[in-house]
Length: 202
Length: 241
Image (tube, rainbow over all chains, first blue to last red; front, side, top):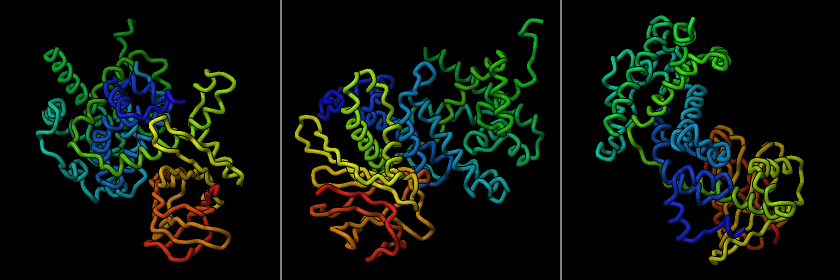
């Protein structure tokens, strides 16, 4: 029993030196301290994503909380071959945030156009100075900004707005096939940019 | 015809799929299609990493300490419950304990509560050898109005915390209030008021001493709380005193 409940400062420091993937092995064995380190590393990113999607602080906190409890409870299902811990965690946050949005009246109003597409696309609040951001965040936002606006719009409405391509088509008054095509083109261009950075960075 | 010459008509769905933008019916069909179409699988594999980067584009924000504390309170309680069950499960073989699923245990507590089992015994767990004191975890019982809720009270170093999961949200204009009872018919109010998240999780510190307390109860009260309970308890946690 003692091996599973080392609570000293020492063990916390040791845990902090482990990679996410190693921590998840401990989490799968019900190690709450290992989970605490995972939470430390990804709580801000998870909250920021939930907040970007649902636009309300309290709802974003609920979503982040539930997502981390899901990470804790299903830690044994994490597969390091498929995704990084951060990607896996943020995937859970995204799914839950979009589900919540689709269930909520906010989404109904936005779909009906009462709140306008532009508002849907805006981040409600900028909470931190740009200086805090990592270079990659700036690059990814830059790459999004460089997309033709009709491609950026369909990607953002789908991923951050939680709208289906059929809903987006009716909001924009565009044919369904056109919306899918813009998604494909936009993601393809982002992919080229990402690959460019990898090559440059290597 | 070589595979690369064949342009699958569903390939256009791959981008909408990785963005989570297919309609329910389409999503189901596309997933089935993926099993048999290497071209679409390749397209998804190519585009998924791009979507995985999108979260990095959002404005940074800081998660509140309260959020971290709520998550950790639940996680520590569950770890303790599992560890307590682990001691029992240790007997047959260590390998069996490894496969012990945390959800089974927590659900087990809920199921026992739903079945009206009241004779659940408190579990005392020594926490390491670092002198952090003992943690007592008392499983609770959910009444019919909170059917399926999972409840436990966790006590350490004189501090107690009530943790609930799968609890229905309080009705509009209502809030959950914690009460302490020294015996039948006696219910003292506390200033511990709480609600639950959209999926029914919640945790609240029980501010008063539990010395001499036989039962911790939760009722649904008008916002702001009540001095006397206005309804029957939804949750009861019997303490060993």
